[in-house]
Amino acid sequence: MQFQQPERKKRRTLSVFDTAGGSLHCQKYFADICQESFEDEKSLNLDAKYIEKKSNPKKFGMCRKRLLNWMIPITGKYWCHPQTVFKMVYVLDRYLSNRSVPHKELQVVGAAALLLASKYHDRIPLTIRDLTNCCDKSFSKSDLLLQEMEMMQITDCRMSKPTCSLFLDVFLGKYVNEPYHRNLQVMAYYLAECLLVHESFIGMLPSFQASIVMYWCLKIVAKAKWGAAMQGLFGHTEHDFLSFARPIYDTAFPTFKLTGVQRKYFKRHLMIARVFRDATVKAYVRRRCPKLKGQA
Image (tube, rainbow, N blue to C red; front, side, top):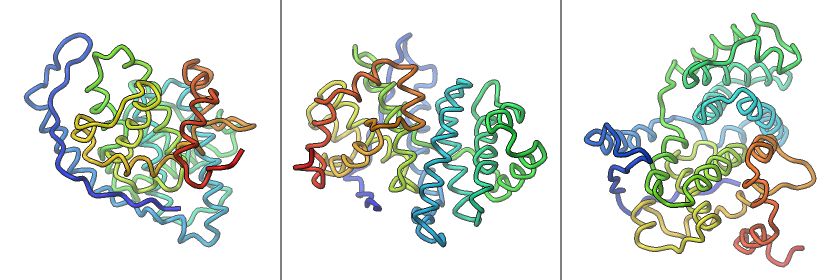
């Protein structure tokens, strides 16, 4: 199911925010950087419906979900930079939308996307040995190097496109002095990574993804009420965000088996495990899912 991205009601007014240790050193550049990012995200050139064009969309979608649930815990195991996950998924989808990849080769494709993203964002990037060990040596070093070279050609080496994590940091900066800021930050990245796996978020503008995540985090963590401040920050109506209750419900709350993102966060952050196993929170989101009303 594809969700429509509503038009922003007005251009955001992004002021410089203060960090915990004081003002940012780049205050006079910050607003320009943010506005440039909002403009730059429009040129991501990612086909939002590329999975539907595959010979067997349902099977391919399941393989993509399984691949991401394998890859995302690896970023947690090696303590990769938060932006590495989002850049990895962007590179992966960019490649898969331009190439027909046999299912047996998806693992080396995913590993190459992770390797590129790690080289771009991590101070100490993952090595080829790390990735071959994680996959139980199902592909060789030369296989991964060749795949990495081909992936760079397909993506035109354009790795600097803004991702959801960049806009999350912008929005989170507005709440840096709130007592719940740390919990808000952890939950925002958890929900954002959960939604990366959902097909409806492929090709969606990163700023809109971040807006959806922040809205639901503010509702769950701070029990915030919709008002002019949130309207001005996100540039969308509350109705735009309520329509995404179903993907939140489907991806963030555990069932009989934890997903890769849930394993990554539930083990490291007890707050996330406690909140998303809470029946009250689950019922709160469930009541906002029209198709789930009346179900047990």
